[in-house]
Length: 267
Image 1 (spheres, helix red, strand yellow):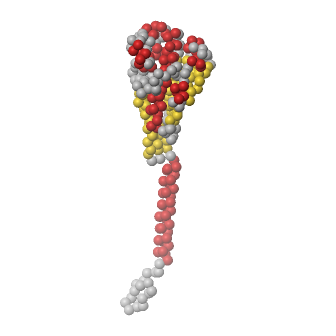
Image 2 (spheres, one colour):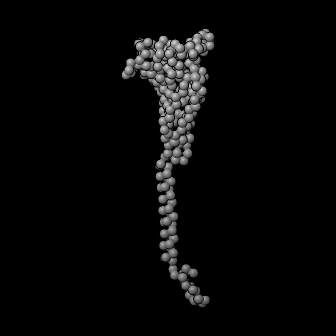
Image 3 (cartoon, one colour):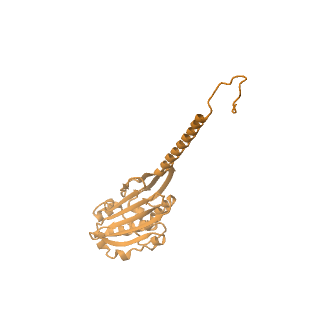
């Protein structure tokens, strides 16, 4: 999931960045750590941030990383790219973020990173209102079961005989000195309103990982309105009762009318 050296087709920014990092890994036993962070706000908007960190070995293999990464495509698509910067320990870190205005836009933002057929797909965010409560649910799939090839350009794979580098994962592991899944690691983090931060660590070659997170916020003002309404209703009923009681007290005393006797005005 690296930032792109070039984008051959729309929606492949993350994919092409990963390909650039993989080139480095062929040359040395480097480490690449990529995090996809999804932050959701109470109104249903939010931000998607992808961060790739390359260790010192990778940085030394490509000391001009800050000049070699071309991020024009991501910027053109509205992403805010933080240029590659050195981090303690001698490595590099690159990040890009993009906001979404409502729940329906999250899937499109994710698709801009890896493409509709990429390893990060079927992401969806819902926001449901109930009385005094709003529920959030985020789901998606991270499918790295295809190994390194999931980040490659289809045309390039065909040219190289169906694999990303023209060799098997086993051959790559021998060259790297470690399995590709150990050299390249991924993390998905979600932050939903009213829900705990959740994290997944999908691995290259493993079965697809299902992402599912939920949260809920409550609106105490709704209950205050109900309480105020109840108090007002009780006050109204009490007032009616007092008025009726007062009228009974003020009513003329009852008496027995005697036939032939004088009648009172109210009779």
